[in-house]
Length: 131
Image 1 (spheres, rainbow, N blue to C red):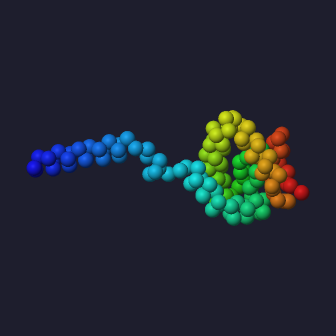
Image 2: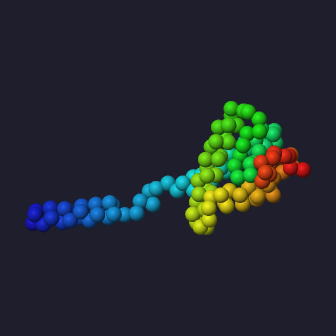
Image 3: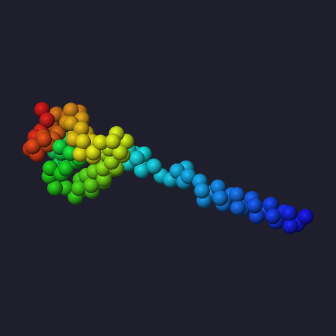
């Protein structure tokens, strides 16, 4: 009787291990897209403030750039652009287009939605304030 219990315990452990080792870890994995979006949402007020002060602008590739040097702004710009790269790569893969296409289209959307007084970069690389 004891050997049957041991046998069933061993089989149960093996089945559990086979399930656990062979399972899809997505239930435990962190979704980098959701995390990037969440971080970006938290940054919006700070980015808007920096845009209003003329410290940062939107370049023609869909990324933030410093207009004036500012240490605090540099970190924020770097963090934001890192997350934008994650999102752009995801969209590129999902849509089957190059990242370049995604960046250019996003820059166009950003220019369209920009508020008056914000710094933008045109396709030739020239910076201007939106009117």
